[in-house]
Amino acid sequence: SALHYCMSDAEPSIAYLQDNSAFINNEWHNLVLEKIFPVYNPSTEEDITQVSEKSQHDSTEEDITQVSEKSQHDDDKAVVDISERGRLLNILADLIERDRDILAAIEHLDNGKPFDEAYLLDLASVLKELRYTAGWADKLHGTLRFAITIPTFQDLRFLRYTRHEPVGVCGEIIPWNIPLLMYIWKIGPALAAGNTVVLKPEELTPLTALTVATLIKEAGFPPGVVNVVSGYGPTAGAACLSHKDNDKLAFTGSTLVGKVVMKAAAKSNLKKVTLELGGKSPMIVFIDADLDWAVENAHFGVFFNQGQCCIAQSRITVHESIYDEIVERDLEKAKKQVLGNPFESDTRYGPQILKIEFDSIPRLINSAKAEGAKVLCGGGRDDSCVGYYIQPTVFADVTDEMRIAKEEIFGPVITISRFKSVDEAIKRVDNTKYGLAAYVFTKDKAIRISAALKAGTVWVNCVHVASYQIPFGGNKNSGMGRELGEYGLE
Ligand SMILES: NC(=O)c1ccc[n+]([C@@H]2O[C@H](COP(=O)([O-])OP(=O)(O)OC[C@H]3O[C@@H](n4cnc5c(N)ncnc54)[C@H](O)[C@@H]3O)[C@@H](O)[C@H]2O)c1
Image 1 (cartoon, protein in one colour):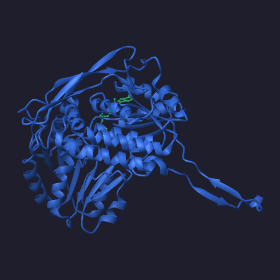
Image 2 (cartoon, rainbow, N blue to C red):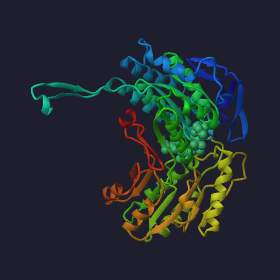
Image 3 (cartoon, protein in one colour):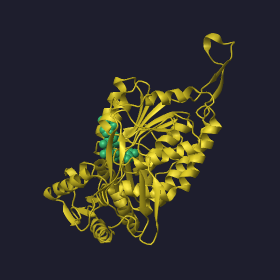
């Protein structure tokens, strides 16, 4: 279907053609059962288009995973030639850059995030990540060792080497919060390492995944190397989890579904599993921190993407001697958040994407009020406009026993508690089932505190600087395995 979008009142609208069936073997296929589901715009609550839905036992004439598996064994293909892999990934990056404004606009329509944020942050990260992994494609060699010391064969010399081989077909399932970037995090390293992919985007946000599929074909990737099939988790997703020809599952989403993924992998063929799951990440502000900077980052970190970020620092704890000052400054700043049309350039704050979150965030907010936390601003839905908007909210006097201090909010809510000593702060923030990220604001305790915290990544005096060269992933219930950097290619 043709979609029109308008970048602002002053700009002309641009039309593009949205493919919405299943992308298999470089062609668009109707699925056998021909079911469809609607995709809506969370800023307006209106339907955008309808997308082909894969049911669990539904397929095209050819099985999607087998198509992907077959393309592994064709010697002429880019999967085998390591230079060609990198070349094609670079072409894909160039095509995404060419279509950057269209892709940012689709991401805005589909997900609700401000256009500028999608264009400047998400798309910039997408391009950097793709070009970075493209560079790795011809450098994934194993190691070479001359070994001589096996006691029983002392006179013999052995040559030992390791080869890095593709895993095979990678089933990849992604969430809705940063759809295009999550897609590239998954396909970039998989393709650089010579794998083929069957990707299922989140049912709420399938549009950029489908649009980039056309660019994959345009870039020249051979048929079957990347396949994209949309649908719901328990059906389309579940089919991917249990398929016997899938060799790997890379999943980003909730901890609850992460456990379903592990179980399905164990029950089918012991696929390898990488899980990037939920978090409840702490931010600790010490007395010696630069307070202006800490407040600035607290806001960016929590309100970025309306709090729909796995690494959002949803538990802020502050030394008691600076607590009042931080609370006051946080409040001042939260009141200045601009809500509005996410296509306008001064809007930094859009709607929640998900109707369910729009309902569940106020429930968690209300639980905090009932448990005695002090709401300083916001505290509910914003009824002044259409769309799933939640008011930017700041809570003070939060304690560790409250639900809001323990459960992932995935919404624009700052919670602030206080601590007395360094040891107490470390012990308290680590007392969680999650271990994705942690943030430390200090001038002189960075190394000591970072080493003590049980988190996949610790950021010091900054937030959300997820860099494509550095491995990313969680401990405990936040997941296993790493994405990005050299580790992400293993
Ligand atoms: N650690 C990270 O890198 C990271 C990044 C973004 C989001 N997340 C986490 O993702 C969660 C938010 O996303 P969500 O609520 O959409 O997660 P979710 O687990 O409900 O859905 C994520 C994906 O899994 C699919 N899915 C759902 N049920 C399934 C099933 N039974 N079988 C197979 N697939 C299934 C969905 O269709 C979707 O594509 C949060 O917990 C957030 O912290 C983590």
